[in-house]
Amino acid sequence: MILVVVEHEAGTVDRLSSEALTLGRTLAGAVGDPLQAVVWGPSAAATAGPLGAAVVGTVHEIADPRLADYAPEALGKALAQLIDRDAPTAVIGTGSERGAEVLAHAAAHLGVPLAANVIEIRPGEPWQVTRQRWGGSLLEEARLDGSVRLLTVAPHAFAPVSASATGAPATVQPFAPDLTDRDFRVRITSHVPAEEGAISLADARVVVGGGRGVGSAEGFAQLDELAALLGGTVGVSRVVTSAGWRPHAQQVGQTGTRIAPDLYIACGISGAIQHMVGARSAKAILAINTDRDAPMVTRATYAVIGDLHTVLPAIIAAVRAAR
Image 1 (tube, one colour):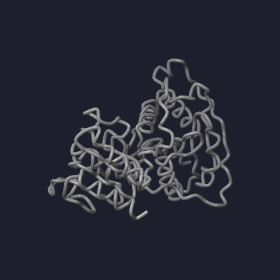
Image 2 (cartoon, rainbow, N blue to C red):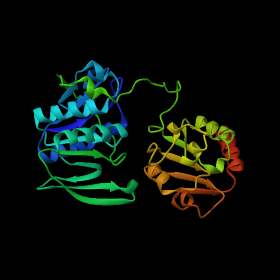
Image 3 (cartoon, rainbow, N blue to C red):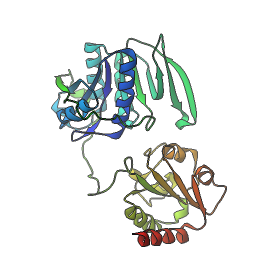
């Protein structure tokens, strides 16, 4: 069995889990094992339909009402118990902060290695994996062995899994883990709801990014306007969040969100390696900067050399005129 750890929101499988399912399906076909998934939390059973369309035969639902909120130690222990019971060939998690944390706890319980940020697997004796290191600036070739292979998938290394129009819903099998209150020492205790109608930075097809060159919190009004016109959202560099101009939830980069839009418009962003790690999966980058030698400009698909406060109003006017 190839087991994929699936994260979801009210029964909707998230993008990174869908990417992990792509690798899981490929690996299951290569080794001749069935593809299965493990989920938890409210509406977990609702994933049976979309996961069945992704050619998952069985969904294991970790059944514990205390897991209505995220609790990494408890989830890692529950996952380890499921692995002990079913002995899968491999367990694949997402490269999200939560996916990496849960798999790390499970690996510690089982006493087996964990390969993080994998972009390629070659089964054999032992398995060979290629994984990203140092924020994606280095690729490492490694051997992965053990009673079960645990790994996480690098964000956006694979396309989201394609659904089958005729796939029947997966069979849901509840799994009751043996958890104590001590396992819930670390857990989410409150939620701040996202702005109504806001587009997720991780899922946006267009991201308008702003860096130090925007100049102030007020300067982001033009970026907000352009993002709204293009049906996208705003992202920022670390220096912007450090200055308190925008919230950390909008940060793109190694310590923020990794994005994969069709278009990334980078305004006044120098392009430090930590930021480029987060934007490397963008299909096209338009850089607006006064410095033609800035790393972001040299890596961009297109570049406009000029003051963003002059260039952005012109772009906004052109978009409005085209409509």
